[in-house]
Length: 337
Image (cartoon, rainbow, N blue to C red):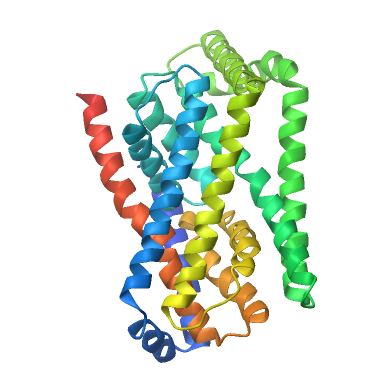
C-alpha cells in the first residue's frame, strides 16, 4: 500500500472510530452494553446466518455477470471472490468506489481475465444493486407512510438518497452516451501527462488506454444486452437486500424489541448512502445513519437501537470482513503461484 493510500486509510479509520465514539457517548455506552448482554444468542446467530445468505446472493450476482463476459467460476469460487471484494470495499475509503480497483484485480487474477473485465464485473454488481434498492426505498416508505406520518429526518434522507442516485445515474448515462468520444479523446488527453512519469512514451500509453477503454465499454454492452440473465441478476440483488433487511429485523428481535419488518426494507438501503464517505466501508457513518433513521421510525430507545445495529453490522460488515480477508489472502497466494 502506497503512502497516499495508507494515509487515506489511517484518516478514514480514525474518522470512523471517532464517529462511533461520539455515537456511543451520545446514546450511552452502559445502556448499549446492557442491551447487548441481554441479546438472545440464537437470534444473533440467525442474524449472522442471514448475513451469509446476503453474501451468497450477491456472490451469485457476480458469478452471473462474469458468466455473461465468458469468465467461468464455480459457486464456491465466486463466493470467495465476492467475499474478497467485500473485504476490499470495507477497508478502503468511499466504499465501493474505493474497493472496486482492488476487487477487479482479484477477479482478473482468479478468473484469468483482463483487468477491465474484472472491473466491469464488480462495477456492474454495484450499479445493478441500485435498481432494487431504490424500488425498496419507495415501496417501503410508501407503505410506511400509509399508516404513519413520515418525519422530516426520514423525508430528508429519502430526498438525499434520490438526489445522489440521480446524479450517479446521470453521470453513468452521460459517459455511456458519449463512450465513443471518451475512447477517442480521453487517452489523448491523459497520455502525454502520464508519459512524464512513466517509462513508456505518450503514444504507447495512449494506445494502451484506448484499448482498455474500448474493452471496458464492450464488456458493459455484453452484460446489458443479455436480458434474461440481467433479470436474474437483478432478482438476486433484490434477494440480497431482503436478506439484509431480515437480518436487521432479527437483530431487533434478538435484543427483545421486535419491529415491523417493513421498516428495515427502506432503512437499510437508505443507510448505505453514508457509505459514500471517506470512511472504510462506511464504518461509523452507516451505524450513525441507521440509528438516526430508526429512532423516529421505531419508537425504540436509542440504546436498544444501537445494540441492534451493532448486531446487524456484525452480520453484514464484520463477518464478511473476516471471511473476505481470509479469502483475499488465500486467493491472492494461489493467483501468484
